[in-house]
Image (tube, rainbow over all chains, first blue to last red; front, side):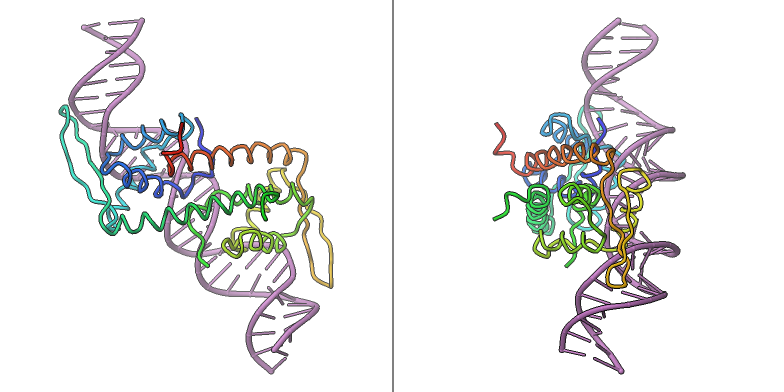
Length: 111
Length: 111
DNA sequence: CAAATATACATAAGATTCTTATACATAACT
DNA sequence: AGTTATGTATAAGAATCTTATGTATATTTG
């Protein structure tokens, strides 16, 4: 499925929320989780995911921990303390964003 | 105010929805309307707005009509037939997007 | 058993969208 | 007279994403 342009800019928030919820996750796991939660509607591509994870790590928001499972490499990511704090802000921004978009789309509901 | 990254990709949808609702609008009017609806939270910059309007026009989704008011130029935009049809799709995508983001952020509410 | 699919990470080229800065012009306010 | 508001426009650069490609192992399927 082709993702709409709307998801642009929301990937970091999605990653951080999932890590906040699940403690630690690896890249492929994140793609599968998102696919499951959105019932196949949102497919995160590797070309978007891995650079995003590396950047969040470089910014000190994520820590990485490498494991070998079934002879295959896994890089588990988890939120740092800074990342946990930042996640609160991002989720707050997301709530504002959703509220604002709903106001724009559904002006009748404003009161 | 600084806009969050989340709005990336939503500008076209916002423009089209406002035009669907108000018939015709000019650029500056759109920025003011959005600012009012979002209570100052979302400020569309000219550098984003005008290229977006020009592109939607080039795609045949908008028609333009130039007027001179108080000795100043205004370019009124309105949806073409194609644009009206496309707006329905975009709003549907936006609803899916919001629903998916809420599922991701608020997994407890899934049932 | 060979081929396809799933699992797992990674990067590079190019497209798209946006921010920031700048530009021009008139009207209104202070 | 200078700032703010109204009104449109573009160019340089940043940020994010898509698409394509690459490597490697495990599992499923015909």
